[in-house]
Amino acid sequence: MPSRSINRLLVVLSFCVLALAAAAQGFHIGPHVQNVTKDGATIIWETKDEMLGEVAFGADGQFALEAAEAQPATIHRVRLSSLQPDTTYAYRIKAGVEEKTASFKTAPASERPIVFAFIGDSRRWEQRWQETHMTESLLGHGIEFLVDNGDLVVNGHNKNLWPEHFERFAGLMEKVMVISGRGNHEGARTMDTEHDWFAKYHELPGKGEPFSVFDWGNTHFVLVSMDAVAACAEELDADLAANKHKYVVVLFHQPVYCAGYLSPDNSRYENGKSLANIARVLEKHGVPLVLAGHTHTYERVLPLRDDRRDDRNGTAYIVQGGDINANYPDWWTAFSDDKETMEMPTYTVVACNEDGIDLRTFVWGKQEMKIIEADHVILRASERKAAEFLARLPGLNGDVLLNAIESLGAMMYQPSAKALLSYLDKPETQLAAARALRSIADADVAESLLPYLAKTEPAARRELARAIEIAMPDSLAEPIAKIAKDANQDEIVRVKLIGALQIHAPNIARETSAEILKQDAPMKVRQRAAYALSRTATKDDIRMLAKLFDKEPDHFAMLALAYGLNNLTGKKVSLDSKQPLGKSEPGKRGEYVKKWLAE
Image 1: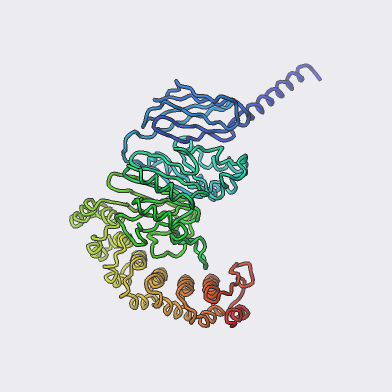
Image 2: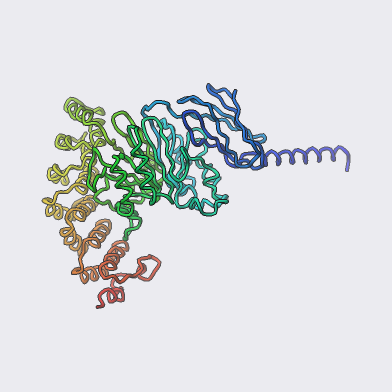
């Protein structure tokens, strides 16, 4: 071979070797900011090769300061110290020929108002977060940090799954602290610690797991790892007793309250009883907000105290489980998602202001094909501020009026309910007033809403029906049942009114639901009626339930009736759709009926 060709080959080979070496020396997982305080922050990243981790950093976009590890590693954890509070710092990290720069802001020194965001169960999102540009949307709210309440990956002990998680939030994690809680999918802290990649890739604030406590501005935060929640009551009690901040936010992975998944059985249903000891501590100390995930839905629970609604002093529970599939609401459900109009991913922005905690939840809107605001509530809003909004209503018009109506609803200000009724008569304010009345859900005006179930537009009717579902007085059971059975009524209105009966008048719900199932009702109405009947039927109704079950054409409704028969007879039949009952056809279910009816 000519010398010139040999030289060319050597050059090519050298270039390839250098390129491979450079690739090997690069980032495996990019930098993410952890454990930010008033005077420090930790940067964690991973390189493909073992090397010494170094960070150049400084205020005003400069890199005059340096911090480094003591020993070479692949997973790097470098603490930046002697920082100033409420100050933006730029930082630069090199991994071989690769270089990454970003900036973050330290925690405030004063107890000023703050803004943060909350997500959960992000492992389910695959590429949806990137495709819907959620990072850009989230950063547009000026958040100071983000909390991801666990289940970041399918199996936390599988190292190969973690790069996808960090790539999902590229562009976010290097700019703001993402505080990640330990969910069940991360695995217990005491199990196979050598492969506990959650612990290796994260540094929680305060003293860390399992009871991470930190203060940010005017708010005190407590984040409890999944495997420590049930036993944390005493420590939680002591911590909250010592708190001096204006607000408290507590974060668990599993919910204290949750209506669960939309399913014939009570999948992931929590009514506060399994964590009753925790709920008592939260209410004892007047905690305004508890955030959770685990169940892959979005649901907001009314502020509760002593198992009753208490808008001014109660504890509000929010499930932000990363997906859209909420069950039919329970009496304490203030808002739940709608899988027909919403898609994952979702996030909630929380502003802890001087005059209340403002929460806005965003989802991907199926109809709008963009990110939309799904829910808005203001917790602990001052009576003075709410009264001012109400007093101003008569003099307002246009968008200013609509915003004032919306704000009264978000503040759940019950004294405004009667005044809002008049705005149902005006086309330009009808829907806004209906939404506000749904948020307020005042039983004292429920009867006044009935005429509007016949004369307002469908979207407004549905909001008003939901208001009745939350707060229906016993005196309205009969007229509500009549509307629920009306075949000419909007089917979603009927669904919500059946729910109102189930929650507030179970005997009437049983009669109404049975009558509906004997008719040719729309699928959604049949499903809701079967669900209600399965929860309100008594042992005297077993034969009636069995007869309806045998003939029921809708799959969901059939399984709901089977669930009721299982509970009433104690003779369990699998409700799995892949098992024989789940595949059964109407009129051919005699073997199951015989089992339930057998003495």
